[in-house]
Length: 491
Image 1: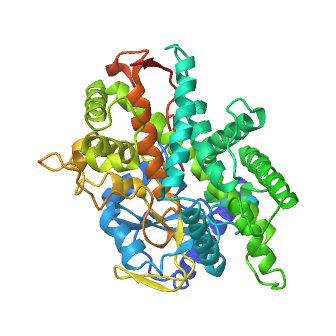
Image 2 (image 1 turned 180 degrees about the vertical axis):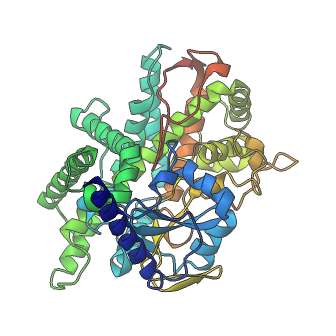
C-alpha cells in the first residue's frame, strides 16, 4: 500500500514537472534561475531573513537578472542600478504595468492609482499629478502647511519636557496632516480619537504587509485565500480605512460647490459630475475612494517611517547630528523656521537626509511591475503579463555607486569640496513611468521636518550609541523601523 502511494505521488510530481516544462514556450525564454519544484516553485530557496536577502543570495549565482517561481508563477528579478534602469527607464513603456499584489487585490480589485493598469492607471495618474500640483505641491502654499504642522509637532515635543517617548505616532500624525490638508481639505487635532485610530490602522497595515506570511501569501494566494489567516486581518484593516475615506466623500458631497473645490476629493467629484453620462469613465466612486486611500496611506507611512529611522541614526552617530545642527545654525539660525530654499545652502544636511533614505530603504523590494507586451530584455523573451520585481534595495546598495553600501556614510552624496552630489542610483521613489507621484512632497517634508526638529531639540538616547541597533524590526514589503524611545531635549 505504501509503495503504491509513493508511486502515485511520484507520478503526479512527474506529470506536474512535465506540465511546467510543457508551458515553457508559452512563458518565453525567461532568464535563468533556480529550478522550481512542482507546486512549491522556489519556496525552499527563500531565506528566513526575507525575500530581499533570498534574492541577493541568488544574484551571486545567477547574475543581476534571473527568474524565480512564486508557486507556479514565474517572476523576473532585477538587481542593481543598470538592470533596473534599463527596464524602468530605457524600456519604460514595456515595463509600465503593475504586477500582482495578492495581499491587496481583494481590497483594490485593480482600482485606484497604485494598483491599476492600462488606461485606468494613465487617467488616474495624470489627474492625481495635476491636482497635487494645483494644491501646492512644489509651491509655497504646501510649504507653509508643512511649516505649520512642524510647529504643532514642536509644541508636542516641548510638552514632553525631555521625558522618554516613542516617536512613532507623533510623527505619523504630523506627517499625515499634510496629506490630509490636500486630500480632505483639513487637518486633524492630534488628540482626535478617530485620527489616532487611523494612524494605528495605517501603521498596523504596513506591518502586516511586511510580515513573512504576506510574502508566503503572495506566492500561494491561489490556495491560501480559502483558508483563515493573517491575510484576513489585513483585509479588514484596509476595509476600515476605505470606510473612513467613503465617509469623507459623503461629507464633501453634502457641501459640494463645483465652482470652489476645496481638496482632492472635490476635484474628483467635479470630474465625476462632468463624466456622469459616460459609462466608461474612470471617474467613479470606487476609483475616488481607492485613489484617495493610496495618497493618504503612502503620504502618511513612508515619510514618518523615514523620520523615525533618521532620528535613530542621529542618536547612533551623534557627530553627524552635531554637524547638521552646526549647518542649521549657520544658514538658518534660531529666529525663523526652516524653508525649502535653505536646502540648496545646506549640502551636508541634504546629504544626511539622502543617506538616511538610502540606508533605511523603506520599500526594499519595490512594487512589482508587469510587462504590458511581449518584451525582449537582455537577450531574453518576457511574454506579455510577466511580473517583474525591480529590487530598489539592490540599487540603493549597489557597490558600483555607493562606496560603503551597508554603512551610514553621508559622503556618498558629497563631492571633495563638500558640495551636494547627485547619485543616479538614488531611486528611493522608484523610477520610470511608475515613479512615486508624491516625490516632491515627500522631499519637502523630510527636509522641513528634519531641520525644524533638530533646530529646536537635541536627541538623547536611552542607551549608548554603540548599543543602538538599526536593523529593521521586520523586513518584507517594507523595512519596519525598530521600536525605540528617545528624549527631545530643548536647545
